Image 1 (cartoon, rainbow, N blue to C red):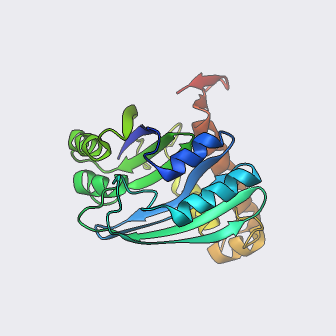
Image 2 (cartoon, rainbow, N blue to C red):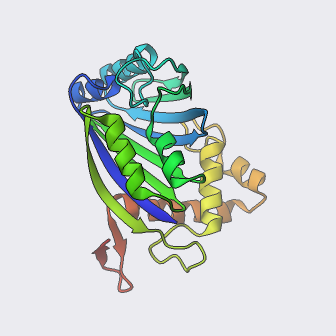
Length: 246
């Protein structure tokens, strides 16, 4: 598997969500789940920020002239819907579904065309910067970036942050992907709402659904969370225990 990370920096008046985030630099949006097929796309996003910022983000998602994830600069005729799953003073969770048309373009669909099936997507949107992380099995990476640059045209600049191989899950995982049992525990926790506020399931209920002891699940989640925290800060531990830049 390969990993690529890149950032789209939007020009003014090119993306409704980027405009809101530029006006509210304390706010940010990250994807909790993102899936695409050749015909459609659906995702769940988690936004944080001040109450005013969250209100503005919700309005941008619900009233934009075209879907916020579309790279088209005009309405492309896509069928879209956005549903607010949670909104309080500290957090906003949005579900979006989009059926594309021939005029539509999006990062996941361009990835499908050039990188093939089986890609995993993770996004972070702050101010005018929209950062994408894609884990994919391989394909035409140069063709992907050429098509992406053509789609955004003058609306955004493209900066490639990382192009690397991802450590195989068959290794001992010193700095690579999570071990399968930790990844399974983390995915189940996200899917069943363990990290939601309030939680949709507690640790005991999650452990019962996975048919493992509660203490085992707690250990796997702690290890997975620690691993992801190290990845997020761009650091890992050396064999001697000292932090070493990745």
